[in-house]
Image 1: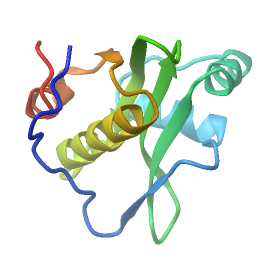
Image 2: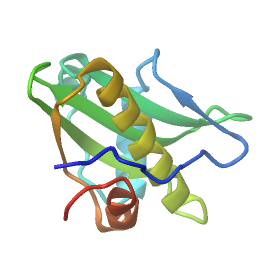
Image 3: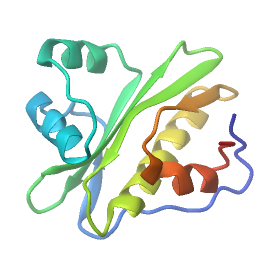
Length: 137
């Protein structure tokens, strides 16, 4: 469960931007999952998951347009929303990228589906970002 009272601000580091309109290249997404020690998926199943999601949020490096962060939002568009596959490129910006992905995706949910309960499947690296956004762990 999440409370939206006074969440701490999270911004993308300089040189990165969000992409919400174009889905990620499936092979690039699987490569990001692998770099983050997360499961990879057959491309057909991954494509179906992205297609059936409420939205897919990517973080890209501005210069190279390399995929460095991702989260997928599913919802019954009524009472429940779920965040899946939350990942960010390992390195010095990883925690800040995770935090920005969480904050931005929660903003979408709050705007498009107010009152939804939110659950998330997330790696340990995301725990601080989730607590900062009001999640009860």
